[in-house]
Structures are given as C-alpha cells and as structure tokens.
Image 1 (cartoon, rainbow, N blue to C red):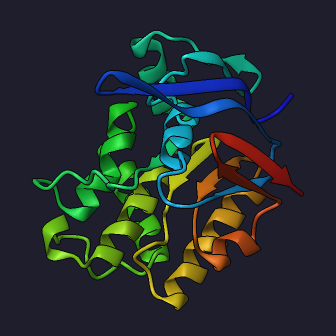
Image 2 (cartoon, rainbow, N blue to C red; image 1 turned 180 degrees about the vertical axis):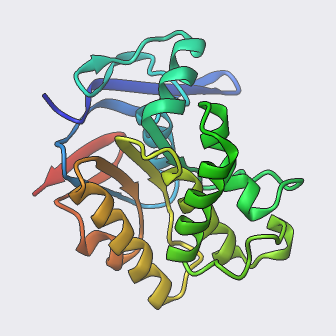
Length: 223
C-alpha cells in the first residue's frame, strides 16, 4: 500500500473558447517514509497537481489514493479527510490575517477538537522549531515573506498529518532557512509519513527520495 498515489490523472481548464489540458495522464507514487520532489518550469502545472494530491481539487479523470483509500469527489468528504490526515502548505500561504501566528497554527488542532492548552503547547513547539519563537503574538502582515512561509509550514504540521503536501515551501527563504525547512520535511517523512513537495530549491531536492519532472502535462520520476 502506498502512502499517496496518482493513477492516470488528467486535469484541464477552459481558457476562453479553448480547453487547456494541464495534466495528461499523470502517475505518481510516494511510499511511507518518502519525500517526492516535483520540479518543472513555472506554469507547468505543479500547483495543479499538488491541489489534486492534497484533495483541495479533484481530477477530471483518473484517481488519487491516500493510505490505500480512493479520494472521493464529495467536497465534504475531502474536507474532513484533509483535516485529519493531510497537512498543506499553499503557495499563497493563506494565513488568516486577523489571527496571530500562534493562533493560525493552533486553529487546525482546535478544529479537530484538541483542547486549547494542548494546541497552544504544540503550536509553540512547532514555531520555535522553525525559528519563530519570538513572533508568536505577531500578525501575518507583521512578518516577512520568509517568516510567513515558515509559519505556514508549522500550521501544515500542526495535526501530525500522515501526508504533507507543500507547494514551494522554501521559495522566500534564505539558504539557512531553506536547509531548516528541508530537514523538517525529511524528519516528517522519516517518522513514517510521506511528503509531496513542489520546488525549485536544491536543498529540498537534496532530501528527496524521488524527483519528478513535470513538463507538457507529463510527469517523469526518477529515484
């Protein structure tokens, strides 16, 4: 049983009168304990693929499997599954501007019923691990782009997910923090989960078990 698998996945969008196929029969597999890096030029469809793998979106054709289960089309089912099993770092980050950094990281835990005091302890631990221990009461707009990105990584890990899907999680970071995030992703996989990460950063590629190149709607993986 794979941690994550994509089988014959197609996804396209209408652009005016034309339909553009972004993904054309993509296959991908990540085992437990693995990091899979997805690379490719901007606009190649990396974000589209990660939206499907994370269950935020659903393929036109083909199937996504998580932990041996087929991901269902129902938005309600996908939202519930994601809350409990998938951590997502969006390229746009999507931190809530009216919540502090600490509250942003606590929120996913509170949504699944974790007592606030436990959620606060775990959120503080994650933020400290990511070098944000002195930013707990700041709001997202008071952080640099790199600090916001690290806060988003902490939030994605909050519920101890089995699957981590991260879209360019180190694009705004300096070399030291790229290495930090890469090591945290590697540690996450080594603890028994799996991570699918789109990236242009060599530090992320260096910790990957497989590198998958996406171009022309096709995915080619090497291990």
